[in-house]
Length: 187
Image (cartoon, rainbow, N blue to C red):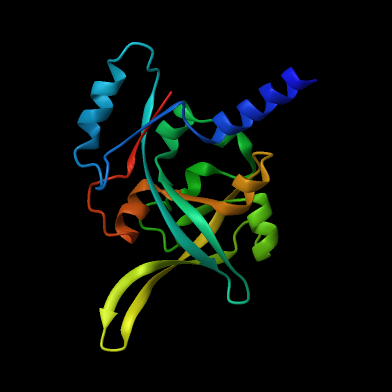
């Protein structure tokens, strides 16, 4: 029983997280593509994907929840984590709207977070960053509307109630990171 429980817990944790995370201490990672290429040449490394990690609030007007927002590249993330297999509604590929589309960028949220915020596939939610711009009235938080394009269920309440994902490109833009990332996940 314990061996089965341990294996299930390990699978759930590694389904959302990578085996190895490479970050630059104290600053965003610049020229991450070169670092990913170097990692790919190392023995045992099967795949690598960049990510952005930041804390935000999700607001629906009546409900607010603090979450960890991760910016990911859906294609390369699929090779490193099993997050795409946890999707119960929608599609990870819809995080980025089609070029020329008027649709809001997509956000993928956990099933428990969707329940807490009373959100369904296609609903809009505001992502609020505590770091914004300074105005004569003080600090104004940054706010951007997103559309729920996928809902996932990892089976771990902590992940399903406190994690949200957007595309890497939208995260770089939202957090004013330019072409930098928080780090690289590897399998």
